[in-house]
Length: 142
Image (cartoon, rainbow, N blue to C red):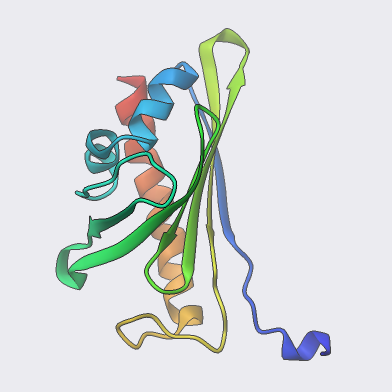
């Protein structure tokens, strides 16, 4: 297989520093109530193998499955049929937390459940995550 055969697109990666302790950030990204406050309504529970849904508005219920949980540092779950969402937290001096969001599973040859090509959706999602990240920042720094 040559490099030309590999049609994967780079992960969306965004890192933010929050003026909030790691425990508060973890509660915001690893509880159903926390995720609903800045991202989407859901029936998430922090258990590996747990299947849950994100309420994706006009796109309906989006199926997910928890794949990794390492409190208070890392949470990862499958989202829809192709994507993986990972939240990584790192404690910084002064009661701050570094938060990295990784949205992976992008492929030039794939489309979403709604028939949208990944390469088309990715740009909008990258911009969307910027706004969503600011909502999370406002929540944990309040």
